[in-house]
Each structure stands twice: as C-alpha cells, then as structure tokens.
Amino acid sequence: MGIRPWVVIEPPDPRGLRRITIHGKTVGTAWSLRGLRKVLHSLGYPDDMDLDDRSRVHWRGGDSSVWPDDRGWRRRAVITLMLVGLLGSLTLHAVIGWADALGALTFAQRLVGVLFLLAGAVQGLALPAVVDHWGCRQVRLSGALVLLGVLMTLATTTLLLFLWLQEREFIATVLLFLALWLWSLWALRTLIHEKVWRGIPHPRKFAAGVTVTALLTAISLGYSILYQPIAAPRHFVLKSEFGTPQTDADSPYIHLPLKLYAKNTGGIPVYIVVDDYTVWGRLAEFSESGEGMKEWKDSREDGWAPESEVFESKVVDEIISSGQFNGPGETLDPGEEYKMETVITLPKDTEYETLNAVLSFAALRKDRGKLDDEFFYEKLSWLESEGRYYCPPDDCGEHVIHHGRVRYNNNLINVTRKPRYVAAFWSPEEGVDAHISSFNFKEEKISESIYDIYEGLDDDEVNREAERYGLGWFSVNSEVSVKGLLKQAQP
Image (tube, rainbow, N blue to C red; front, top):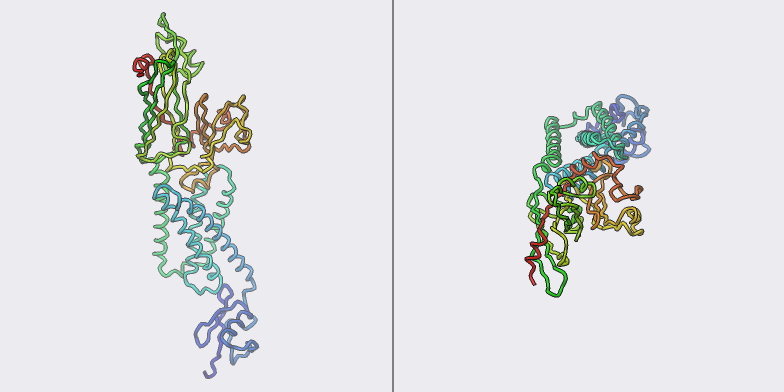
C-alpha cells in the first residue's frame, strides 16, 4: 500500500458529519470520535488504535479534535419535531380516511378515504426517512419522502381549517389542525433551506405526481360533497287507502280496513327518522246561514283546520287512531317498498262526517348522514329510569323519543364541526316531530313541552342542518265520507 494512509477522515459536511473512506471507498460516517471508533471496530480495527498516527489515519479539514456537531442537540431537536409532526399527521389522515374508506356509501367518498389512507402510509414511510435524512443519509430519497409527507400535511390541514372557518365552531381538534398547519410551514421552510429536492432523481416528475394526486383528491372530494347529493333527488310513492268496511248484524261496530304503502322510487337510500299514521274524524254542524267560511280564523286558533266550508259550522277534527308505520331508524333503499294493514273500529251510529287518514314520515338521506346505533333504541319520556330523557307527563306529555348522533358521510366535515344529533318524537296525541341540531340531552333536560326544548336553538341552525343532511318530510292523506262507507259495509 506504500505510504498511502489506511484510513481517511473527510472534512465535516454542513451538518458536522465526517465521511470515512479506505482506499477511496466510503465505509461509514461519524459525528464524533466515539462514532469513528465504532465504525473502525466494525471493520476489524483494534479499539486502542492510535487515531493520531498519520501513517495509519489521514485527517482532512481538521484533526481528531474537530467535530462541529457541538450543536447536535439542534439536529436531534429537528428530528424529534419532524417525527412528532408526521406522527400527528399520520394519525389524522388515518382517522379521517378509515371511516370513509370502509363505511362511505358512494364510490367517490370511499375513494377519498382510500387517498387519505395512502397519504398516511406515505407519512409512515417518511418517519424512518427523517432519521436517515438528518442522520447518515444512506438513502438518497429520504429527503424527498419527508418533503412529500410535509406537503400532504400542509394540504390537509389547510383544507380542514378552511372547512372549519365555514362554521367557526370551537372544537378542541381545531387546535390540532392549527398546530399541524404551523408545523408544516416550519418543516417546509427547513426542507427548502436544505434544498432537499437536489436528491430527487426526477424532480419534475415528482412535482407532477404531487400535483395530479392533489387534483384527484380535490375532484373526488368535490364530487362526493356537492355533485352526488344534488344529482340524485328523492322520490317516494305513498298511499293511504280505506278498504271495504266489515260489520255484523249483532255488533254495534264496523271494522274499517286501512292500507298504507310506501316505496322508494328514487336513487337514494334513506333512514326513516320518524313516521306516523293518524286517522282523523271530522265533526261538524250544518250551517243554515251559509256563513261557515267566516269561522276559519276561530278554527285556526283552536287547532289544525286545513279548510273551511260554507255549510259547515263548529268543525272539530278528532284523532280516532294513530300509530307508527315502519319505525324510526329503519331504512328504505331504492326500489324497496313497505306495506301495512290495520283495522279502524267505529260505532255504527258514529256522528263523524268524514274520515281522513294521513301517512307521514321524516326521511334522512343515507348518502349524507349515518345514524349511530344509539338512535335505534327508543326512550320513554314518562319513565324516570330513562334518566336525562325523563320529563314529568304533566309538563311534557308522553312521548317515545329516539335520539342519537348523526355523522356526515364525509369524515372531513365530521372532524371540523361539533357533533350533531337527531331527535325524533312520537305521541299518538301530540303527533310527531324531528330535528337535527347540536342539542344532546346531556345537560339540557326536558322541563317543559317536548317541543319547547328547541326554543333556545337557532332556527337557522336547525334549518341548515336539515338541508345539509337531507332531512325532509313526506306525507299523503285519503279522505272518505262516513255515510258512503256505511253503505258499503258488508256483513
């Protein structure tokens, strides 16, 4: 080997790392004298080797006392901050993407979820790349992987903050979004300062790939949030029909069949949030003066009066029968239909002039919202054992309550807003109602009428949430003459 030294220690690079070569071949790197001895020991050199022996070791750019990594704490701090930020972003991407990838209704929404999971996987690969890039840099693309992970964090947190600004509701997670957004700006500045793109073999292709991925994500997100819900309206066929009454000569009653029918003829599956059928009997006196029309205001003050007639006076609508049709929480998929038959009992000498059967239900679009399991269990407001759902019957009446959280089918919206809850009420005497709001029944107990619990809520919020989740009411009614029915009665 002549007089050429066995080991050459190269000058420190900008990070303080010194490369070790033997006969022109790199065999390792070291941050300190201790690290140098570890590398030499792994190559078979003795532990007590004299590193200042110029016949065996040649130092370039400083002797054995020059190790610029005196600020190694800064490098370790950068590594720690990079790892913490990427771990936080990876968790965020996984939380958002997992629910959409597995549970979203539409293909576009699932695609968005898969893209978020892929972004989380890339950030998982960037974790060891952080250690390598600020370490020995044995992998050429380590800096590019870290840069890609940081860009994904910046894009996602910017989108999340934008969605949060639309509602501006204070939630704890917004602090995480803001922290990760600020972290991504700092990390991007650090990587730009180190010019990490120099290690990318084809920087233009890399930039093009990042741009295309961002565009696909934006298009899929826009499609799943805007286009799909608008492009598929809801259509239902509803029927409420009275059948032929049955009677017996020895019985003072007649039995009147009632047939109810609902079919989803649209392209969107729905949840039945609450439903009801009610049969009304109308009592009225004959108005000889023909001035029955003038009583419509009094009828409105007394209750529901859909119409007035000249020769009807003192009109009263009474509930004869009421019940639930399909039941809260049930689903009605496209093409699916539901039928029900019940029997209404009336005395033969009934004084009702007409009967009116009304079928109504509130439906929530499944492509926009998903009900938690808690909603499917009914709560009875008159039982003290129901806890926060209990209300004294003298104050609130008696209601069957269904209550649970509703989640938007795009998890990006769920994580940027306060939880929303669906509350549905049914009573044979007081009818039905359903709302979506932030009301959760946890601290705000029912203390007055069942409908007064929403007085403190913003009407704009209730209307906005109903539109956002596609909550709408649908009904049909059928009115018949009682005298006509009695003539059709069959023994």
